[in-house]
Image 1 (tube, helix red, strand yellow):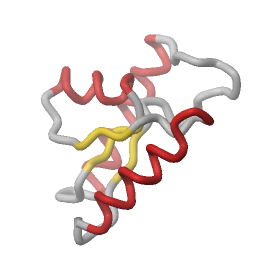
Image 2: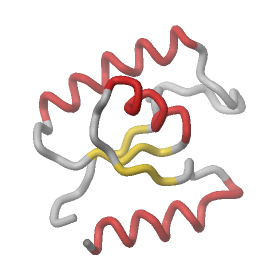
Image 3: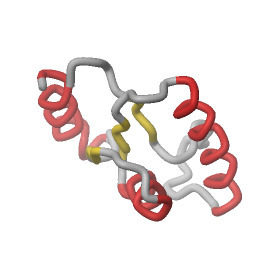
Length: 87
């Protein structure tokens, strides 16, 4: 990628300790996401985690997926992001 991507994790206000956002949370997150896509039209989109990946798959939005950067996945997340940004 020759530009920094929009990194999306499904719900931007996710409370600490809650492992899965509720359906209502995801609807709110989608509203914010659509606003970001309008502002950064043409930027690549990277989903962080399976929840965000599933949401964008369902709406048919092109994206690249990386693991959610929790403690167990931090190194895989960094490796994937480094590869994506390096091009």
